[in-house]
Length: 178
Image (cartoon, rainbow, N blue to C red; front, side):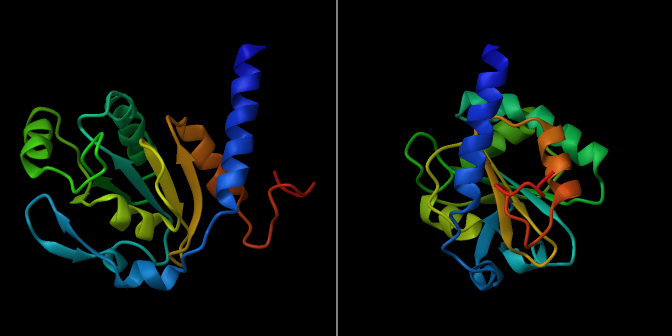
C-alpha cells in the first residue's frame, strides 16, 4: 500500500513538472558547458541530434545521486540507442561543479559517458526549468526539447516506458496517455 502511494505521488509530481517548460529548445542549442577535461562543448553536439538523450544531473557529494549512478549505467547498457550525458554541480551549494572532487570520484568510480560541469543557472537553462534538487534525470526528445524531468531516484523502466509511449500532442492527464 505504501509503495503504491509513493508511486502515485511520484507520478503526480512528474506530471506537474512535465508541464513546467518555460525555456525553448533554442536555448539548449546555444548552451555550452565545460567537460571534465576542460574542453568547452556545445550541448547541441549531443542534444537535438535526432535521437533521445538522457541527462543525469548529479554531484559526487550527494549520496542519493551516487546511489543512482548504477541505474544510469544500467539504462545506458540496456538502451545503447539513447545517449547519456551527465552534468555535475557542487552540492549542497549548487554552485559550479568542483573539478577536483569530480575527478577524484571518477578516478575511483569511472563513468562511461560525457560529464560536464555547471552551476544551478546553467542546469536550469539546460533542463528548461529551475533546478530545485538533485539527483534529476531530464529526457530530451529527438528534436532536442526537454520533455520529461524526474527529480529524485528513478527506475529505468519508467524512462523506457515514457520513451515508448511518448506522443508530442498527448496530454498525460488524458485517457489516451499510456
